[in-house]
Amino acid sequence: MSQSSLLWFSNNLRLDDNAVFKAVEDDSKLHCIYIQDPKTEHFFHLGEKQLGTHRARFLEQTITTLDQQLSTLGQCLHSIEGDYLESLTQLVQQHSIDKIVTSRHTGIYEQQAIKEIASRFPHLQIVVIETATLFSEAQLPFAITDIDKSFTPFRKRVEELAIDLPISAPSLLPPPIYHKDRITPVEPSEGFHGGEVAALAHLESYLSSDAPLSYKETRNALDDWPSSTKLSPWLATGALSCRRVIARLREYESQNGANESTYWIKFELLWREYFQWYAHRWGKRLYAFKGPHNRNPLTSYYTQRFRSWREGHTPYPIINAAMKQLKATGYMSNRARQLVASCLVHELAIDWRYGAEYFEQQLLDFDIASNWGNWQYLAGVGADPRGHRQFNLEKQTEIYDPEHLFIETWQGNKDCQSTDQFDYYGDPIWPTQEGGR
Image (cartoon, rainbow, N blue to C red; front, side):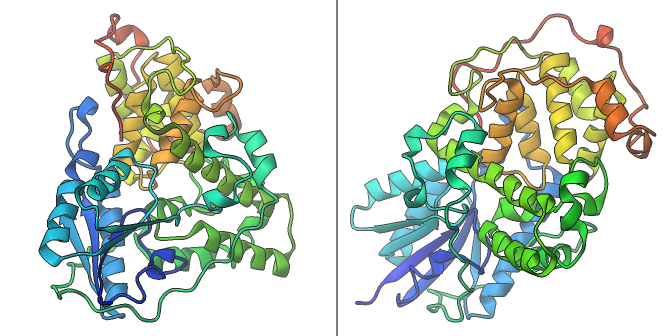
């Protein structure tokens, strides 16, 4: 039977190891889309309505690359700006769509759109496929509602599970419903470049070096390119498959030997995995001030304190350096993220969700589950069994930047402000209706 399908790309902007293509291979016509919904890019509590420059450029590069890749298969990617549900509704009606295929997403807006489009069009076949995780839900040895409250027991239950081999990119796709002009390429930038081509090239470069053999010892460096894998921006957009990373890591270990550092790369991917399923379990509670377990942080919101943190003008040079690096590049190391989050929550007593939202705006590697899950963790309202994780910033500076090279590079000592200069009384707290993505 002739069937027209809509392939909605979201967190799976790649050809390699992308099972959505299997679901459309026998269809007669295929319409490939990516939707940029303005409400997911409006940061209401920051008073700003756009993505950070670096994150926006990286995403544009990723979309352009996918469009170019699809063109080699006779297809094209339609990039649409509009409400998820209304955009899908219009396309279903306009092109007599019989089936929608998409990737399972941790975002509540994406999930709601799929539920509501199914309700509007009962005849539609809806296919939602897991493309962002190492394991499928069916592989997990527990129900999602029974996910562990912290990472370690989760890791012990899943790390010996078999991880499926990644599947190859498609060699043939159904023809498009109609052709369009190619998406205008975005000028290349230094450092990270969005898209699957750059992702696979970086993966190969990293796993052709000696860097993985010392990853565990170097991963906490504040500003050193080979110290960590730097795969997270491509994993976040879905330009790179986490299963492809594992498969290539196994090859590396067979050729170079496995050690604690190569294991630690998988360990960090399991942290990412945990937060993906944690987000599926808790839904809107991922954005809740008190977290999923109703723990009440002793924080509020202070306008000037937050601005000083965001601009890198706090009393803490290492925090200032990290925040200036983020604003200038869209990148921040994992160690620095822990320090700036600890500072915001414990030193400045600010509602953690403002930090999470600012990271969502700025980070190249923003991922809903990892970002909001980690902020809950650092704020003591999420998956941290200790419930309070505060760093001694002076001691952390001595350990990770003893010669102040990072601080000097990013001018962390410039325009430091004492907390006595900050506002004393808190502003009204975030609205009681839980916000966030």
